[in-house]
Image (cartoon, rainbow, N blue to C red):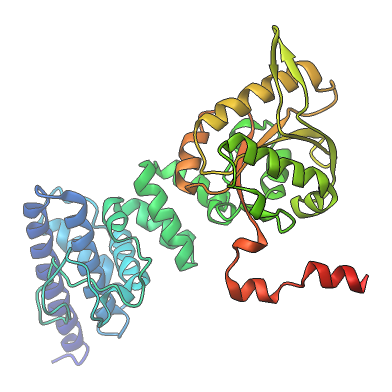
Length: 385
């Protein structure tokens, strides 16, 4: 007997076993997919990926295993699509990239709840594997099962940071992103920009470089430690509170500009605008040399409201029509409020056609006790100076 024929026959048997296991998993998955196609599909791919990973990574199969298995699957299931050698490799990578979900842990999802999820070449593939959330409290469980496998492939193949992957999974599920839109967001490093102020600059500023500069110019939150919060909240009117904040900023305009960024020049507060006999008085107006544009800031002492964007739109329209010089870029508007739901802001601001953003502010008195103690005392600094 040829000595080479035995290993070949053994490999052939292993591949036949693998084909039978994968084929059974596919058929079971197709049967159950009627109940919830995406969850079941991901479960099947995760299980197949694990099966393939355990056998290929440990050297049980040869290099051509996936191609041989794929060809045999197509012979046994004519018309089968989505199980080419390339697709099988993606399933293996899907498992490899999320294999920590298969680790032992006391915290688990109820999506896939079989007691034993270990797979060897001698076992059938369990299309309901036990997926575990292992020390990952921020894992987007619901969103993970909502997005298609093709989107998962784009995310794990192009994004290596785990928290960034979570960001794209959540955003894909929430906005029902197409593959093209998802890839564009990844290329733009949207997860990095998410740490900056939520805005619509990319859509509303035509020059890409200028849009990028505007995005990078503003932060998500500002510490205005010169504001005396004791003067806020003691009056009946929110408008009065906002005037107090405004006046304290004006009185400390140098500190405010240093906090807000570079190249800002203060134009004025309660700047008078008028069109068709209707007067408007935006809280703070600046000019930014780097952006070559006016920046109007509307102050709010409470939580963000969508009406603030409409108010800001009016200011920007009048500024661009009546105040802006021909060589200047379109004006930019910022709502500066006490609190804002970032995802909500990003959702509602995208359909406005003027460049706007929403930032929040805090004061030193509102910081946690341990942080406030670390800050230098203003009066002591004055004595030293």
